Length: 298
Image (cartoon, rainbow, N blue to C red; front, side, top):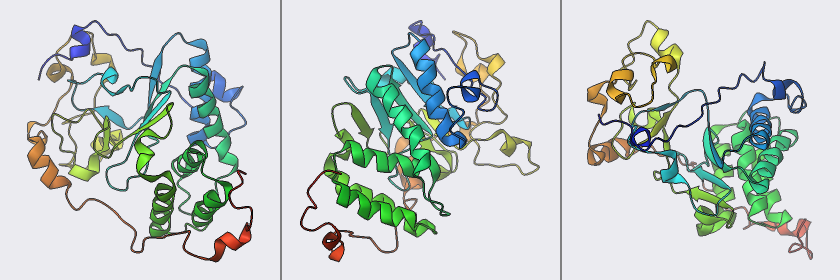
């Protein structure tokens, strides 16, 4: 394994590890957001206000680097304030990791995302800030109020996985083929082209195209079961991460988990989850609810 090229370029990323219960912003500015999934977006916005960083990459605590031969800069799209990627198995826009530019647009998007906690329906498959992100992206795409209500109706009745998958597809119908470049300030990297991927979609295996894997938890190493899908032989200790140190010294990787990308592509086949029935929300009589003013922005 080669030395992290960002180290060779003397790029020193600042890691901020936020405890959502004890953080100063969690107790003050962002205390109104009780759901930690939304509170974290408010906290990030507050840190950016005080920071001189140009960009920040947000990551859940169970996101890990498996391939250091990439830099965060590899995924920054010029002139974009928000950069997301699609989850490999559902096409859902991932909330577990994203890149935000430290500008007014990026910070306000985070705050609007946090405020969406008040709109999340009380159903078993609302999927918290992931579901809210899809709805917020519809607003940013300037989809009219009536079309948004079609998708919201599916979201509000999502009591099973298949219902939520239909909500995702409904959102994509209205985002259209331009979803990967919604507006100049928001970019969604195509499925499989982002910096992250859910680890279980390939049983913890990775190739040189990968950078980060999501859903790697310390508890998996503490269990009595030897989980062969884990890319590391033991948990990573941040204290062992030192600037300029070889990655294979700091990280105890399982060599059998590293595959050629062609072999990994075969393993990723049949991991896509699609709804049993594809909802086409506008092919019904729902437009009578807003007729004849359906085109008005609301």
